[in-house]
Length: 384
Image (cartoon, rainbow, N blue to C red; front, side):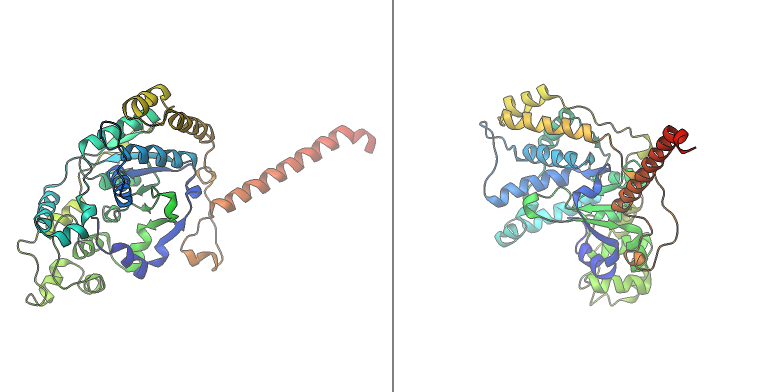
């Protein structure tokens, strides 16, 4: 579920914190990807088309097809993905999901409306995708609890550039950069949305803890919400009162009743201090694909086309050759004043394209000087 209505609220109240990007802008970047969200996307995409991809034994294989080709697409774009899988769910989340299951039971209209939520990512889905990633040479991590929280820990430790997920609670966990639509189907032609957390807080005028309280008011996976308080009212109340405790002291409990035994403090604690991996101890390695292993698993066991899998292996190998080229912004730190026109976007850093132009000019000057010295030293005696 993530945080209800948060993306639109950010677009309305912190628009410059969002940038639309193309996949080519992430060349050379290491990105932590919410694996369960990816697998879920692959499963519901096939479900919406009315066709379920299965092998001859009746086993669903759409998650493997999606994971294989979307990962190759990222590798071809120069991205170094690391998938993070969910561990055990927090007790609060389990209780909230049970309430939703009770709400959905027996009501066909609600079942139709929330049919996507009925799609479950199973342990078998996860294990098969882990095996596939290992054979592809792509690293994965098993989070102790919520994948988004461990993705945020990897970002904050500097191991990766961003968290890629469709759930906005990656921001609530404090990831500095969040990417949406990175793993979306190319057919949808959705630009990648890049959210910058520090700018969100700055433009909204709130602290991280106040942002967490705002997300709880909007609706999260851990507890219910106050009746009659929508997104606009929620942010106004947070700015006015600063915390949920103060809000409860200043609103009419008859008009806006809070849930019985509301566990908002516990939810806040899960966002502030989640159970995560130690990002500083993680060693990420991208290896060569095991082509024979992929053929055995994807073709012999899951009945995928051998030609397509071998072609995919070639693309992975080709992408590895190209990935040895690093990003220019990993070698240069750009400082200095920038005109007011450049500051509209809220960033004082040069773009990747500008860095490439700087490098190009530098190389041209170097070549010119080298040629000049060579000609002068070779023909100097004729000039005397």
